[in-house]
Image (cartoon, rainbow, N blue to C red; front, side):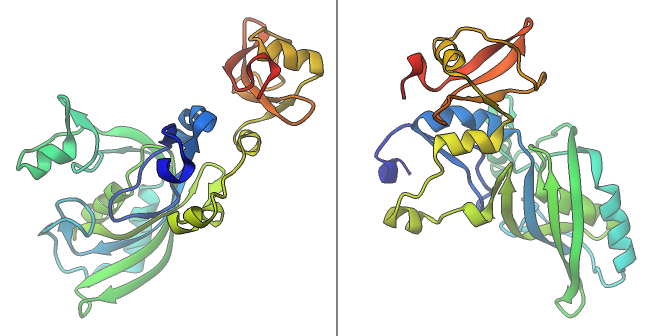
Length: 273
C-alpha cells in the first residue's frame, strides 16, 4: 500500500489471521489518525467450524492435537452451545495469538514448544448465527457454517475451540472471512490488484461522516476549531464528534470537556487543508 499510495504514512486498523480473508481497513496520510477509533469497533465474520478435531492453532493451519467422532452431535446440541457462547462472555484467547507474554508473542512461544496460560477476558458476541450443518469424512466430522458479530478483541478461533470443547468432540476453524469492520463492509473493499489499477480510496471527509456523529460548524466555529480553540458543547455528550466546515471539509474531532467542545484531533490546522 505504501508503494501504491506513494507514501510511507500508511497504517491499518487490525490485521487478519494468515488463513483469513476479507476486510482490512487501511489509513493513508492524515487518515491514519482515524485508525485508533476504528480498531475498537465491532467486527462481523463468516466462518466454518469443524467439529471432531482440535488443532494447535485452533484453525486449519495447525496440526491436529485431539478430538473425537462428532457423529452423535445433534443440531440441537450445537445450537444450545452456540447460544451459551453468545452475549457477554469470558474468553481465553487462542494460545497461538499475538498477545504478549513476558515480552514475547504468545504464538512464538507456542511454536517454539513452550506453553502459555492466557487469562480469560470479557468480550461480547452480539450475534452467533448458525446457517448450515453438514457431515464430512463419512460422518465422523461435522462442519458448521456461522456468522459472528462481535466486539473488538474477540477470537473466532477461540469460539470454534470452545464450541468443540463444550460438545466434547473438539473443534477448529476451517474458513474465516471478515465481512465488516465498524461501518465498512466487504462490498466497499478493493483487492490489491484493483487498487494497483486505480487507487480508489474513501475520502477523509466521507470517512469522518461514516465513523462519528456529525456537527456542522459555522465559519466562525470552524476558524476557532482549526486553531484549537474551544467552542460550545456538542449535542453528543459522551463520544467524539466529527466537526465539518460549511464547505464540507472535516476540520477536527471534538469531545465535550469542562462544559465546552474541545479538539481531540485537528485535520485542517488554521482552516487550511
